[in-house]
Length: 579
Ligand SMILES: Nc1ncnc2c1ncn2[C@@H]1O[C@H](COP(=O)(O)OP(=O)(O)O)[C@@H](O)[C@H]1O
Ligand SMILES: [Mg+2]
Image 1 (tube, rainbow, N blue to C red):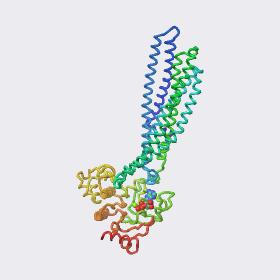
Image 2 (cartoon, rainbow, N blue to C red):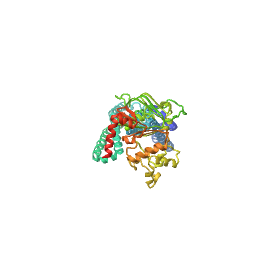
Image 3 (cartoon, rainbow, N blue to C red):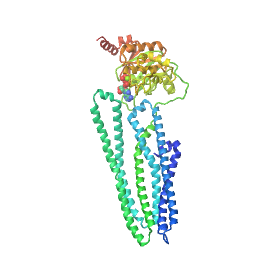
Image 4 (cartoon, protein in one colour):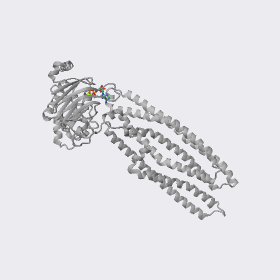
C-alpha cells in the first residue's frame, strides 16, 4: 500500500505532505485548548483573590483564536487529503488503464472483464478510503494519543491509573471486533465481484436473455446474488457497528471512575476543578484516538485486498512486446510463410491448438481456409498480426520474422476482420477512420463500395453521418460485417484477413465483395476463412484445416478430386442450395 502511495501520488505530493502537517497542527491546538480552559477556571474564575475578569477575557480570546486556527487546520487537512487521495487514485487508475491497453489477447484471456471493471472502480474506492484514513487518522490519532496521555499524567498521575484498566479493555474489544470482521469483509468483496459479473453478463447479453425468455430465471439469479451481498454486508457491518457501543461503554465507565476519584481529590484539595474539566477532555481524546487508530488499521487491512488486485494488473507482463526497436523495418510484400509452427493457448494446455503447420503463401494470392468449427482456423490467422505468438517454429511475414517488426508497423500492413467484431459508438464515417485517420471522404466511400456497404449506408437518412450507437447496435449483422470489412480496407494493408466475415451476408453480395477485392486491390494478399465452399472456391489456393492441422492444400478442382472431406462438404452444401 505505502509503496503504491509513494509511487502514484506524483503531482499531488504537496497535498499529501500538507495534509498530515495540518492534521498535526490541529491536534496540537486540540491539546492546548483544554489547557487554556484549565487556566480560565483555575486562575480566572477560582483564582487566588477571587475572579479576574480581565484574565478571563484574555484567556477566552486565546481560546477563540486557537479554536478558529484548529478549524482552519482541520478544514485544510480535509481538503488536502481529498486532493491527494483522489489524485493518487486517478494516477493509479490511468496507469492501470494504460497497462491494460498493452495487454495481448493472451493477457486478456487471464482476467475477466467484469473483474477488471470492479478493480478499476470499487477497489479504487477502498484504496482511497484507506489513503484518507492514513493521512487523517494514522497521523492524527497516535499524536493525539501520545500528547493527551502525556498531559493526563502531567496533571495527575494518580488518576491516570483509570486508563490502565480502560485502554486494555477497549483495545482488546476493538481487536476482537476487527479480527472477526476482517474475513467477513473479504467474503463481501468476492460477493461483490460475483454480483458485478452477473450484472455485466446480463446487460451485455440482454438480447439473448429476451429471445430465450429467460428474464424470470435471470431475475431470480440476480436476486440470489444480491441477497448474498446484503446478508454478508449485514453480518460484516453489524459486527463493526459494535465499535460504537463498546466505545461509549468504556468512555462512560471512565467518566464515572474519573468523576468518583477526581471528585474525592478535589474535595481533598489535590486537584483543581479546571484540571478535572481538562481531564475529561483528554479522556475523550485518548479513547477516541484509540478507536480511530483501530478504524484506520481496519481500513488499511480491507484495502490490502484491493491493493493486491490492483498490483495484479500493474505487474502483469504484456506477453507480446517489441523485440526489436527498428522503426524502419516494414513489410516488403504480402508473403506469408509458416515453418513448423505449433501453438498452444496456455503453457498447461493439454493439446496444441495448432501442430506442425507448414504453409507458403505468395504475395498477392487469394487464399481460402475451410474446416469445421474448432479446427483452428481463427487460431492460425491470429498468429499473422501477432495477436498471439507462436509457441514453436517460425512465422515469416513480408520477408521477415513477425517478431522483428515493431508491432504497429506489422499491424498497419496486416488488416484483420475479427470473427467477433465490434463497431464503436460514433458515426459510420468516424468508425471507418479507425482504418485510416487521414482518409478523405472519397476514400471512405470507395472502401465502402468495395465492401458492398455503400448502398445501404446511402439508404440511411443520415448516410455516412448515421450514429452507430454503442457496439453498432443499429445495423444488421450482415451490414455490420460489411462495415468492418470496409474499415479494414481503408488501412490499405498488404495482407487482409477476413475471419468468417461474410457469414451473415447473402451469397450474392458475398460474391460481389470477393470480386471487388480481387479487382481493386490486386497485389494485396487476402485470406478468407469461410463456412461456405462457394466463398472460397475461386481462391488461388484453399487450405483444409482439421483438428489443428492442415489436412490439405490445393485449388478447388484438385481438392474435389483427391480430398474426401472437401468433396463431401461441397456435396452437402450443393444439396442445401438445390433444395
Ligand atoms: N482464447 C482461447 N483460449 C483457449 N483456447 C481457445 C481460445 N480460442 C480458441 N481456443 C480453442 O482452440 C481451438 C481452435 O479454435 P479456433 O481457432 O477458434 O477454431 P475455428 O476458428 O476453426 O472455429 C478450439 O478447440 C478452441 O476451443
Ligand atoms: Mg473461428
